[in-house]
Image (tube, rainbow, N blue to C red; front, side, top):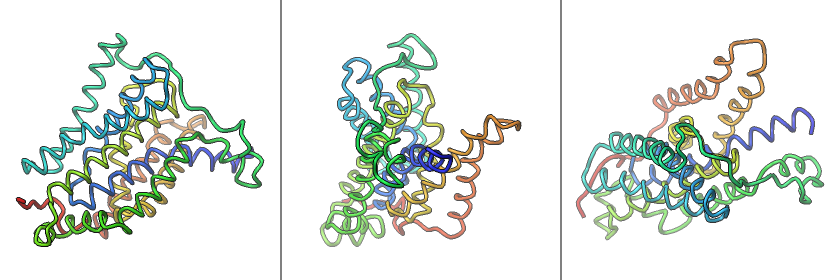
Length: 302
């Protein structure tokens, strides 16, 4: 692979958790629920996937456990915000703190370590298949693993669900005007729960990518704020999975650059903050121009 192919391949690889996270946040946002708990959902998914693979040596089981773990902890966010009308930001922060703290606690109990787990089986690149023979993009695709292609499929399916199905129409209607949605017979709380649970499940898959594909061990705080970045990028893309997924590539690009240039004779911290400076700029743009659903944070007793 030449230099350009290496950069493109690394950009795609590092974008996957943000692509999945921003797609997940789109469901919660469209339902009118603040997607502030993505970080905790992602961390829980990463740990549950790692724990399952460590004991079973089965990667499929690890992915399923990661998805289930993310979905289960998302129920806390839905229970606090939808059922008990707690401020969405506060309930999201609760999920984030619980996901991170619980992972640290169980890590200490199970593996007797405070920072990382032992190594285990992980997804490998597809370089041994026929993808590498495809002109131009072949080497780039062959440098990815199966979860990369799963992520692409989830983005496309999510767009279809949100914008081309009755379920997506109801979800968006609840997010825009829960009172009007209830008037036409839509159970608004159920739809909000559905949006949050789907968000948690996809965030769990994003966590699985971190602990089962990018690495072959679980590392505490390995999400590195990607859940928060996903929320920002989803807002930038108007909670449209296709637009948010494309915007996620920019974060992946800056994440790639900081990995490449850390060896350059400059303070490594300068390159490490580049992806997050990009996210901060996006947040400023969001605050100025982007607007979420009109019913964001509003409640209606069914």
